[in-house]
Length: 295
Image (cartoon, helix red, strand yellow):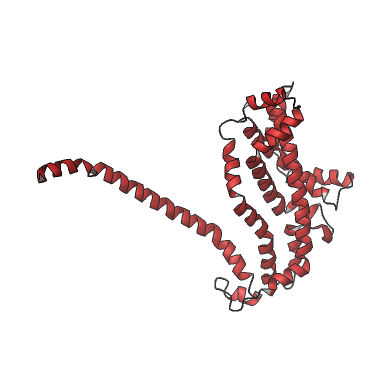
């Protein structure tokens, strides 16, 4: 009986090949975990350093910037907010919100036209949009500055909003177009049979089915416009209209700079985008992968 039971139990034991395979998987998972952990530390530690030093005095930052604060100066954030970050923050919110709204709206309309309508020159339009990805904002800075001056947009919010929208349109159009190509045409045809117009199909079918990619486009546009520095220091001279990236330059003094207050302002400026990525990461991943089949 013992011999028979041992023979029956023998096939249940894992073979040496399976054991080696399991060890390989365990080793590979551990290596990947270590790599991801190191990558997280490389990304997170500079943010941690900025937050820790924003709670110090300037002398303590220069003496030992890698240590925890001996005295936690939370009033640095109050000082930064009262010295102008509040106004810069509001300006950034206005510019970023309008930029995101116009960019996503125009991109969605353009992507809808490129995917669902046939017209002469359609390929040429698509090539021009692709060519827009190769245009660098720095190259067109001088003619763009003259154009904004001639249109009377200098020192207004629109001096930033219009260039931001123009430079984000090519990428967001292609991103949303890739998702629109995955929407079955049968749904569109059924909507037309029910009496919907082309615009109704766009608003009632395409937009609701494309929420992840639209939020992804808005998030990437917000990241660009919130942190943009070059246009904000050239097209805006009025301190009341400056956004956070250019407004923080006022915190630097030629003779003495309160680095604790400056780092507190940088922390305040980085916080909204970090929170957006944290709360919208599910939609961000879904949006980037939704158009990966067709392009």
